[in-house]
Length: 224
Image (cartoon, rainbow, N blue to C red; front, side, top):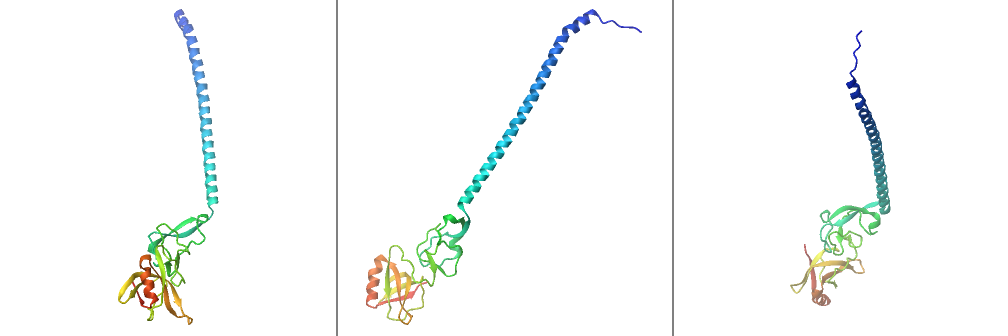
């Protein structure tokens, strides 16, 4: 068998390259270890962020639950969507149904529509409908609107059929003293018969209407 001898020059080259190879291996090993440490650190950072996000979520959820509990239960209410005048019949076109926290709703608020409901005072857009600013058409007394005066009228002739919340024209000697006056209440005699009314008229017309009513000249016709 023939044995090939390695030239001396190659031995010298291998001897010179060997330290470089060892150094390269050491650097590679160090880089690998650093990479492992970085991956471990990255995983730790990710795990920490996940824990922080979960903690934040639960804290936020707890605060939302506390806020809901502080508000309490909710209740439906009726809120005016149009300006409503005294005597207007409350229809579904004049309000919307909303849900509000019960703690924020007045005890007199209405929760559903009642038949024959009539505005007893001016109601602005966004205002709650209540038992104070509304009533049925058979209510004994409507609230006097701001800027109006109440005048009692007992006409000499029989009264036309009317009810609280109606609007009437007040006439004396063929002249309309006040148009579209609001009927606040009905007056009954000892026989429980309606023989007069109390109406709301603008302040500037109240003197003329009261004078005509005092001498028995005032009559009324129901306006549409």
